[in-house]
Amino acid sequence: MPWRRFVNWIRKIFSRRRVIRLGLYGPPNAGKTTLANKIAIDWTGEPVGRVSEVPHETREVQKKERVVVQVGNKKLIMNLLDMPGIATKIDYEEFMKYGLSKKEAQKRAKEATRGVIEAIKWLENVDTALVVMDSTKDPYTQVNITIIGNLEARDIPVIIVANKIDLKDAKPELIREAFPQHPVVEISGLTGKNIDLLYEAIAKYSR
Image 1 (cartoon, rainbow, N blue to C red):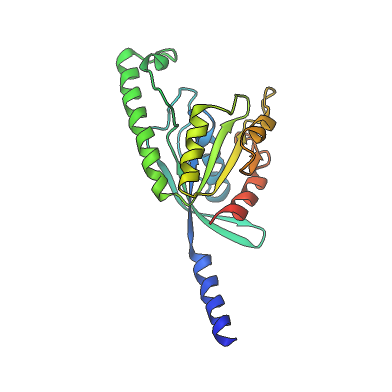
Image 2: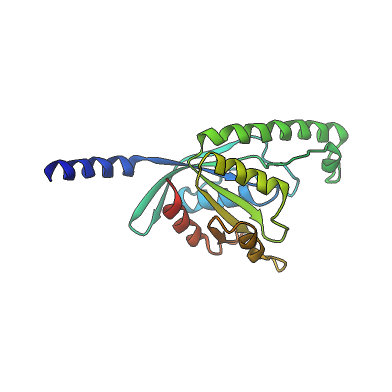
């Protein structure tokens, strides 16, 4: 019995010190950086990165390390990893619609392509994944299926974030129907609605 208590004591020490590498994945403009900023500001007072309506604003992994989150009696220490948006096709002409010159658009497309590759490589360094989806859009897309399939293949816990529920066209129930095998948390990263429910899900499902 004393040995068992000692082992449990050691486990508690290491579990308190463990840092969860939390990766935010999803298609461009799903609200990953907005959500990452909300989490970081809530617990550190500082944002993770810049937000823009132009797709692929985040083109390389953005990090905020050792974010300490208190959920009830449980303390989580997380490294936030805000990933570039995943896309199956990146066309420079799409960026020109937002006022970028051809040269700027081509540069952004090249950087965005590198960002997608980097985000996929980082799957090897993620403990738990938040898959962020825009709840005003059809969730059953090639990008979402590919992201979740890659995470499942690596046995990485997935929490699906049905984001942008503050918008009138939001239909988070469609996300639940599309991916019933994973927990879904309906939030607004912009307004912070239900953010506490997301913290509870991270505490429950992370490993």
